[in-house]
Amino acid sequence: MLQVNELSGGYGSGLIVRGVSFSVKQGELFGILGPNGSGKTTLLNMISGLTKPESGTIFVKDKPIESYTPKELARVVAVLPQMTSSQFAYTVKETVSLGRYAHQTGFFKSWTDEDETAVQEAMDQTGTSLFAEKPLSALSGGERQRVFLAQALAQEPEILLLDEPTNHLDLSFQKELLDLLKKMTTDGLTVISIFHDLNLSSLYCDRLLLMDEGRIHTIGSPADIMIEQHIHDVYDTNVQKQAHPEVPKPQMSLLPEMAVQEDVDINEQFLERHGDYLAIRPPVPLKSLSSGVIGAGWGWRSTFVNRHVDQNYNMDNFEEEAAAYFEENGFDLNETVGMMTAVKMEDAAWRKETKEDVSVFVVATAGVGNAVDVTQPRGSWKEKVTPGTINIWVFVNGKLSEEAFVQGLMTATEAKVKALADAGVQDPKTGTIATGTSTDSMLIAATQRGAYQQFAGSITPLGIAIGRAVYVAVTESLQKTARRKALL
Image (cartoon, rainbow, N blue to C red):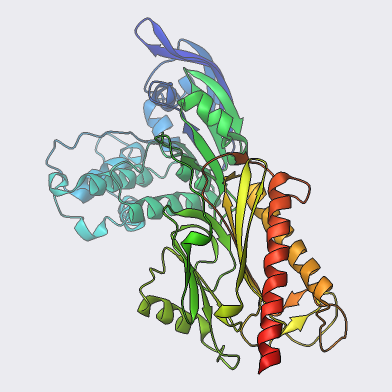
């Protein structure tokens, strides 16, 4: 659909774009990225025919761009510039209707049913029909942006060029606009757009071109472009790549410059012991990965609660009931990891372990109710379950990679299984050694201060500390539970 070969050019005597080559297929949403001054707009202006290149060639539908008359090119290529003047007294519909100019023929131009349909569809697509008769000057910047997009769509182009189309749009209209453009590409429209927002471009674009000082730095899929080193090299800023929670596209998070932070040591002095729950409220939020009833998954959390519930607790609406309980007791659900266990709080055990430059503090509540051997076949998971028995908190005084978080959970699980095996805990249905209970929960939380820990496997200092602390805490809690029950 579009082919650019060794394109160079600019304004006056200086070159802004230098030797750029790429192609765009029909139906692609192709994004152009780069910092201010990198040549993005100049490149788009040359592709649109607005600026003549110093050298190189541009082919539109296999024809040199210079072989098109302006009107012929306008039937194929429509442009939504970054800033569009609105200092004229047209209504919205009149402004959108200007997009039909390229399709009108003859000396006495007439308005056809086809023109009317194209204008109305463009306004409907962009949500501008509601204010069709308003003067353009009465609209907000975001509304005007949508009007000019409607004008471009009214041209019924095959290629749509956009220069930062989400400028001036609020969040909902950004999404609506990009959803619309993405849908239109599935119908055959080719979209080439400059983006300022890295994450939006990654979410919606099929391919990206990253420019730096007028040249191509990298071109490829969002996964090819959204690499921390690429972004640092071009934008000279620190970022961290993360996966989008719902879409298989990478996202970038800015890393602000932080003041030097003092180390924080999570230990027994932070452990609050109440009749029906334990809590830890560290002095700083901790980066956490958990399977708690409240606050599951990744997050930064400021409060950690393990609540005792009766063995006959009704699990039918446990999430709603648990949320109500924690709120009633003054815990902010947005900042809390909350767990539930049938183990009495007096049976909790904890252990501090230090290995080389890292320390961990582990708290466990462990009993043998609901013990299962996960390797053995059993009935449906829909069988009645009772509250979880083994809950484990692992607090790390150090800075963990995401790999270390996951490995830490693995190491803690291995240590739990070893503690159960050494205690001889069996699955009552199979008579085999239990690997856990039916609804265990686990947390690993880190201060993200102090020595960096890339790994937490069983032979690393962090892994050794986690393994030892979890084993001792689970074993001691099992023993406390057994002793208490023996006295009943």
